[in-house]
Image 1: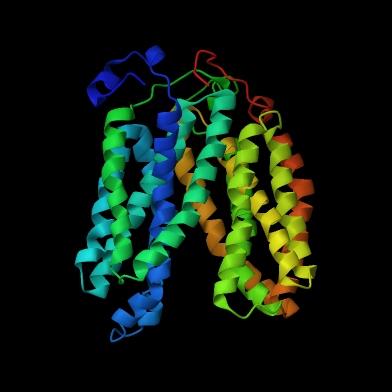
Image 2 (image 1 turned 180 degrees about the vertical axis):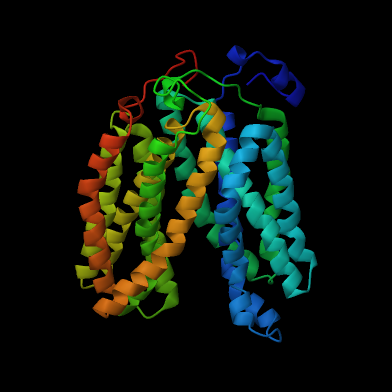
Length: 420
């Protein structure tokens, strides 16, 4: 790419700015930072508990290092979305990376657990900004098939890097409880890359942004977006049931060692980036059909896990379930982006993020209620899977009936001059 400075990027006419691999990779790293914030700390939880064992309720407080940012994302994402539309994507993104780096690294220099917990609020707010702007810019920079591909690539890259971060965080945690917080230094090179290679996008009159479907940009499209948000809430509750309950299901199936559970879970998780990559190439499949496929993968796999009888089969079906996760996460992102006009895209993606995180919060509560009724984790998977599989038949019809055809149809690139 010929552009090397922020000033020269800003000076280009919109027709001269063509996002490519560099911008796609940068935005994938942007949306990976919120994932890293949780996964980098998780392996250090035992060391952190040991370090602050004299603090009252330490076993409750330490896990809050991971939950506080998630709560902040759920609460602040809609407000972040409004700021993104009003102040500009690039300005909010630069501020988010700075906040993320400062508050993320702060625990490396701190000794007070309560102050460390306070820094996680700053991390959570920055995560809401990073997630919202990172997803929004993918919708702004790319159109048609290229947008779908980069939505899939972004999800696949984030999933793959998540597994890597878990391993790296574990290695750093072996050096001490502070070491994992050094991973937040990734914000420095990413900030430089954003400053020089990311520009403020301009509105583009394309059908995927809602222009051809809803010519009036003055009002937020609540009617069609309410369906997107509701399906996202349900999907979040469904597919997050696997990571929160599979360890206990494997224990019921005879796996006693935590290390083996970790290995089996990691093997199955390979399916997530594969599912996202499949979506990136399946540009011929309409949105409602792909949502149904993703839910079917998850639902049928859940039932099979519950009935598998041994952990080998459960892991194999877990791999298929994770493919469904990758598919569904990507298609929901694409559906939301495509349903929003440019000037409401930040706000819409912020609200979407709130519903996604809310679904994740509801997931363990719903599963716990079902497990209490059935008595075992594996039977809980059967019930959840049955509900999810049934939804795979019903939800696509609801989507098709409530969403404009131009949004549901397979994407066609609007700007054919964009490099592939």
